[in-house]
Length: 143
Image (tube, rainbow, N blue to C red; front, side, top):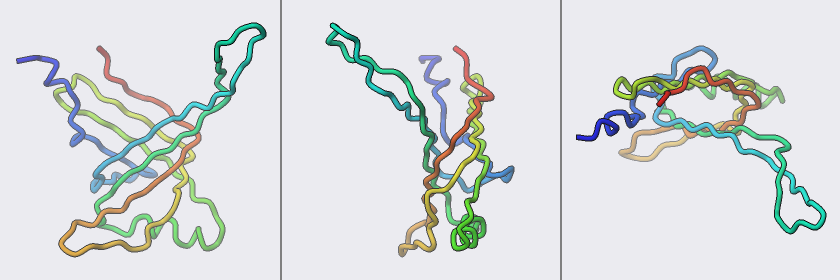
């Protein structure tokens, strides 16, 4: 048996908090940073160079539809033209992995609001896209 196989992280141990509230019905979560670059040309050099000029944070989550959490959070604000900003904390801590990863996303804004979705004989989920402008990494898994 390969001992590294036990350390591969099982996503079933992931947890998510939105504004300090545990979202027990989370099914999947993905947060990414996309680096923005500008091309840099150097005289007499045909190579392509790039310089980082910024970044954007975005992600998606799917939540089993148990509560009207997003409707309660966003519906009135959207109609009144107010921006809802949240803090999201994600943690992945598989007991076999030898550690955990924890991130905090700040200034999270939601890309839309799913008002209603259903399909016969199907578990209903809310698919939520979001953006963020700040993040901190609290925990990482070391080698």
